[in-house]
Length: 209
Image (cartoon, rainbow, N blue to C red; front, side, top):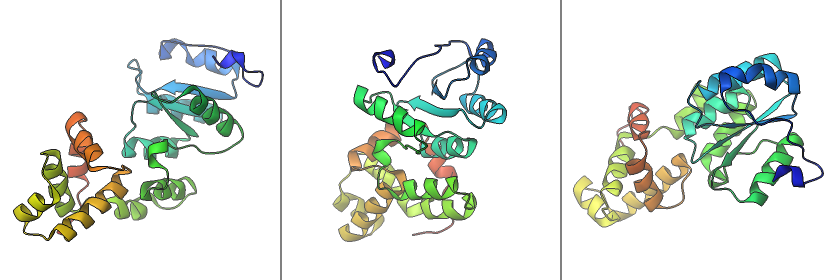
């Protein structure tokens, strides 16, 4: 697919990471695409190894739906772009070309979110711990997430937590911002289908509301 375009050329397609590192540096690619589904070695370690040897090589990682914590770690390690496995061909090509031009490309579902701003500031050298306080889940927000995952409406959540529907709606809005999602259905899916909901619990701040 890539070789069909005059401005793009695939110099190698490699499998096992352990046998690929030397090939990567011998081929000297401008851009490296890494599938986060690789199992033979931690993909974050691979990124760090590549960037340690060559700051010039730009890295794009591909995943189904990368976690916010993963995105932060990969940006800090030097990754320039993210491609979702469900991306269209045009999105795929656009990401590669933008990264080649020196741009940073985050997953499109995070466009305009609070977390995007956090990532951008971390990439520019700001203190991670200070910035992440802005996206920590409060205990109340975690309760709301759990109830959304159970299929409850704002009114039902309010009744259980003794909150007004307006207050619940505000919590839902904040949760969507922090998780870089767009609908409560996505919140429920996020909590049900992926194990990282425990990460949210681990990152709960001491704020009660």
